[in-house]
Length: 224
Length: 248
Image (tube, rainbow over all chains, first blue to last red; front, side, top):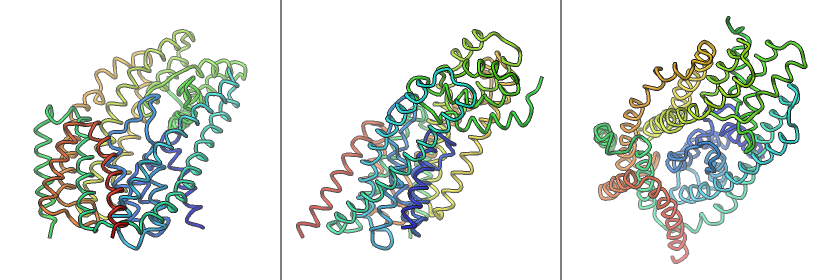
């Protein structure tokens, strides 16, 4: 029970951080997932769920009025669901399910962001030419609404995710090794999609090649 | 003329919430009004004059949130210099496009993914989860807060000439170097993930690592399209995993 209250509180903070306040990036999936895991006493598991959602979110840019998936609150929900129902340790099958759930839930999150922005507009239009005090109250009310939106989204998502993953997880039939390898392929490919953001792999071919070579060398040195 | 330190800090703190009431009508306009209020209260002690000034700053505005302090500082300077409201409105309108584009390129498509990728690389390389998370938060926010503080100071000191100062600034010229660094870290991270696998899980076999490297190169080539393929691949993987379990 305390864990789910923590999820709601943390979800409110993550939901607010995405746009409203203070954008210090606790809403990044890696951070949001690790802290959610910590709430359930499973920080590594939460961080790995965050890691997987993060690689899918690298190219999502919150530019202007664009509608974009809200990965932070989705990660909180998925990491909470994973922490609540997955067996002890890191289970690749359950991780795939948590990732799939997060990728679906972030779409719902983006819908709630649009609704919130419309509600803000209505609230502010009704109060055209506000006095100083009124402006402050309306602005703070909009921020409170965003906090509540994040809290509700994470709590609802965490509970429904736990229910779904709890039902489907025991049916997982692929072995851990192949599932982990497929996750690595997916994660590497998704990290690769971020390269076009940085002027593309052709223009910056030298740092791209140097980075890839350094990555392979470091990874080989780390492997037993 | 200088800005009172308490007002400077209050505007800076409030600018962290400049997007708090983001909406499709005024965008961050009301957030701008909220953030500039401490300065307006100092400039216009008379309540009627204050409300009139607040009304002028509730109009539509948008910029990258980390560069909003630059606009806030410049507008406070114009208010302090007694510029007419029409001039201030024209100035805000002229500034919003360039601050949005610059911030998006510099922060959303540069600094942020660079820091995130470095944190992911740390995790794959075996750093404890909390080291990766804390390193990300500390390094990222040093850049974030430094940019905001710089923006407020430069905006206030340059006033209407802030755009010229921006064109010749370090911030503008950092972009190229940032792109190179981010390209290096991105390719380092995809190679690390391909060979060592997802943190905490078994490393892929050499065949699968090769497949992962090919996947990463394909991802780099296809960009956003590869992302959609990735979403579909997760759905297919779920289907196969569950079917495999139910058929046993």
